[in-house]
Length: 157
Image 1 (cartoon, helix red, strand yellow):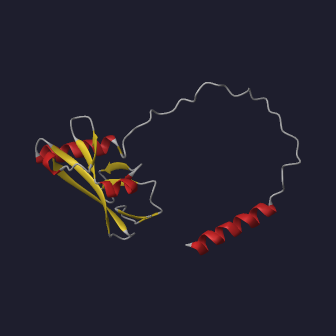
Image 2 (image 1 turned 180 degrees about the horizontal axis):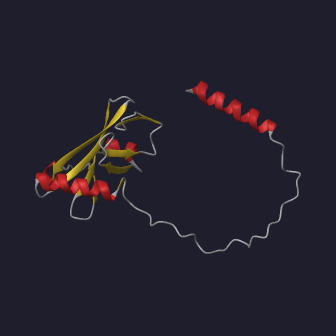
Image 3 (image 1 turned 60 degrees about the horizontal axis):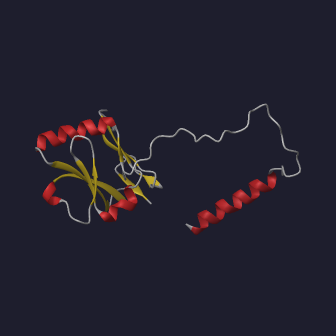
């Protein structure tokens, strides 16, 4: 790992040595107007650890309907899989939720339950769903993953 970072730093150093310095160049003027002091419009901040796409929400609703009322989605991470860690998903009931679990409430009265050890790995995850014949099912877009396997159900940090 250190060798990879050292090599990347060396390449960056060599690349910057080839780029001429712009420090001596006078500032360029453009016909653009000055920046405003109004805040940029952004999407509202969310306090949820994961994001679930509408397709995934629809599929989870079908699974919950088949299991009965009071069914929730439990998500986590476990050791194993092609890339070192794999996603774990299961349905659970209210009685299965512990004090240590992180619980996120979603529309329709269902909860996403995440064990505390998995929080670090799942923060920012987008859970999607695809009906494709090949490669279909739940899909995980994890910004924390440095590597992931071809099937998309395992990742490495």
